[in-house]
Image (tube, rainbow, N blue to C red; front, side, top):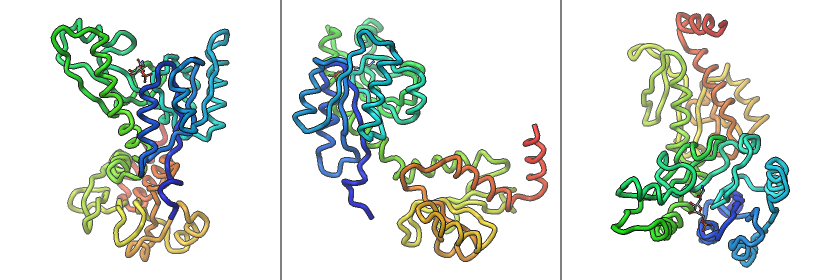
Length: 325
Ligand code: GAR
């Protein structure tokens, strides 16, 4: 197994301003056991304060002014630097440019942003003044996934900051920054390592398995399982295995057509498949989930196939009819 350092997720950070969140992210990444490393700090402003901090720590920096360029041309230059750095994730830390929809789609699910409000409240600008004017008891910051719609992607984590008597936007902003510096490194670390988190993986598997017709979950020998048919007479079509029976894998077990197919698949793609203890003997294959770049469409196809192989004809016929439309 590779050591922890070589498994760190590679993160690029885009900034426009003082870069204090970038600094918090960077120094957190230098602690032992950090889940990520910073491979690039890039800015649309040559005087962004964080560039020097990053350079002092030996992190590559890149500047490309947006002035005189179309959004697309500027984005393309920033994206080239991003790709060149080998980053797997892009973290926006006070990057005051809206990325083009195409850019965001190409990096779907891999861009995070921090926004100084308790989203969904106060998207956009002047968040502190708006929270004070509304008489809110708390302001705060949210880390969210970036989608083409501004400040609207899934909120991953929030920090709350009490609004005091006589608060001004400036005094509030100062304290929200402290909170941001605690929140962002943790939220980024959790996000980049969620592919190794059994709760996250089970959540995704459950969502796909239970979207199939007439399914329910049922534990089997201490592991979550998924069945098709009635509660009484249903049959298992998948199991979720969190390093069961001494295995190093978090995996989904599904049914193949038999031993020949199973062994063939494992030989061809040993990074994807393995033969699980006990279940392997009857043709169940393990699909490894705690690895980089799991193809969730592939997982879904296996669930569907396994479901079909045990579902009563009454249900698969209904599904065939539905598939025709
Ligand atoms: C942060 O407070 C961040 O929440 C905000 O810019 C500041 C950047 O500060 N971001 C936005 O308003 C995005 N819409 P920093 O440069 O010191 O990290």
